[in-house]
Length: 319
Length: 91
Image 1 (spheres, chains in turn blue, brown):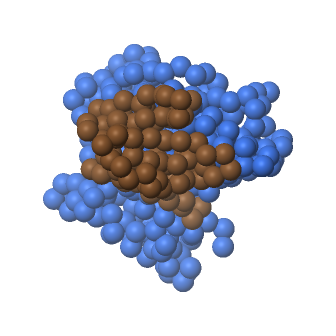
Image 2: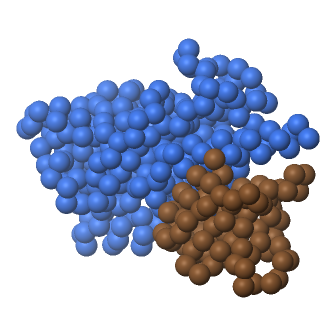
């Protein structure tokens, strides 16, 4: 069975998630979309605001999807898949999860990637974060959760651009998460094809370190290929020792054993997708590039770790 | 380069310590504890006590590489540090 794409729409309270979702569902290409909405308030309203009439809109109420109702999310997604297989629900081709405004997207992504009941049936497509052009800067200042939502995004949608020039917040978001494309929505309208078609190998070609909002992003580079074992060891050490400080890691890796076919690596905290292999390099740059978004990790340490591991693997290979 | 990795690891584990090089290898010191890391060709990285008052010369462990060495050092010097585990998702 081909895994169904699942996307997570997150963003702080009032940042325009429901408006964005509502507009997306009006797009003909999103007709066959099942929606799971998580609401934190005692009485859920968002599902009433999403204009759709079928039974593939489900709500998770009474808590935040990243903590108290995480099990409910897995059960709900599993139930949707079972009903789809049984033909008792409109056959959908994609699932979109709208989180509560207070959610940390990382545990949700982890559940989607690792829960044995659903992980093999679903393919995490993207994490989309809405940021309000008018109130976004103040929200980022006051609510660390909103910073994390933006830092973990595959794509950031700047909303309410009719109220405020989005350039300023877009610049801050560029520092916070340089690898994620920033789209601007007007009244929730955004080019859906750009929203859901972010190539997973889109990484940055620079090696600078930025510090903003307690989040750093940097790019590790290597001009010569790495052994596959080195890559595995590197991810293992990073996962074991960096803990929650590692928010996101994405990379294109030139692997000795796979000349001309780079590996795409992609992880949220300590949970990684299995490496995907591209048929060819996507651009002229053939160097390994690993983008890290973190809370206080040291770029120099990670680069040194990569080099030390490769040296020891090389020494073993030679001997 | 290994010294840089060990220094960075101490910072990651939130412990104040030093990593010094001498003719036999590296000495990692945290508080009163001092451990020596020696590279043994063909075997890997050996971890020993470096405190002269400890007469026991039995190695604390021998590791094939940095991954195991870091795990052992963390257990010895920063047992409070959080332990993560690499998880590869099904996708």
